[in-house]
Amino acid sequence: MKVLLVNNRYKENTVEMAQELAHKLATLNITVVMEADNIDQPPDLVIVLGGDGTILRAARQYAYKNSPVLGINMGTVGFLSNIKIEELEQYLHQLLSGDYSLDKRMMLAIDICEDTEIRESFYCLNDVVIRATTPRMVSFNLALDGQIPGTYRGDGLIIASPTGSTAYSLSAGGPVCDPELESFIITPIAPHFINVRPLVVSSRRVLEITPVECQDAIICIDGQIRRNFKPDNSIKVRQAEFKLQLVDLKGTGFFSSLESRLRRIEGM
Image 1 (cartoon, rainbow, N blue to C red):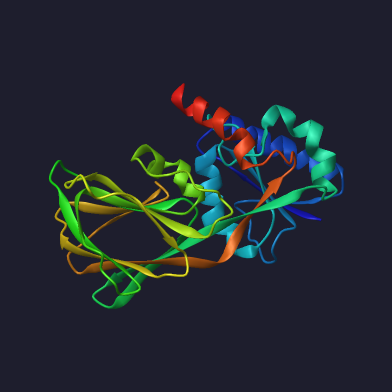
Image 2 (tube, one colour):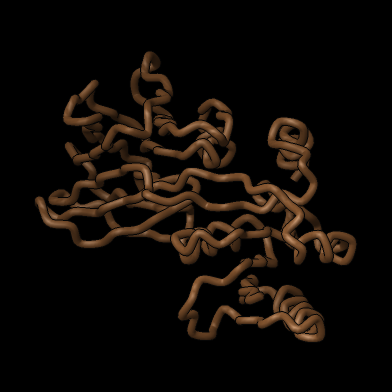
């Protein structure tokens, strides 16, 4: 069995815990691969030590390998984590024996184009955001399979996956969506017109955002990748061809823990 360990490289406690866990797994005759190593074959399991930000990064980097991913919360909210670090010893045998279910989460595929040519492509788990960097409003068109329902004008726009519906989109007034859905949640940020409301559309559609007046605007992917949104740019968003395979050791389900996790956010 091969296990890939991913940790928050900026927090010393996750670095130390990754080293401790690597040693323990090695004593159980399990091959351990650290994130900095070359990964030739997909690991049998990916263990992520950190908060939601570390899991988002791991999803972008490794979800395409279709390996099960366990998030162990060493951060604050831990929306994407399944267990806390103090529960690891309790669940380790169950984890290594494969006694768990998989929670499959839709990923987004994003192309940033210049004129009609793709310049960069990314995958992400939560969302892609286009927003102003100054108090000045921005405006752009959003096409759904070539149909343009209208021009958005305001502080920006969020296109989220169902997993991302409980992140920035929720703060901007978007709905909470069942993570088993396959859909895009389109949430305006401080829209200029009061009748502009969030939309939930099928993930079978291809979304394209083109600027109308976007001076000083940026593209932000999962809150971690940032690019300038230039006048000759366009952004295409579609459903990725793979899903993130999240390990569920407890079988508690999304809705049974939703209220407590949202309450934890409010208390931060």
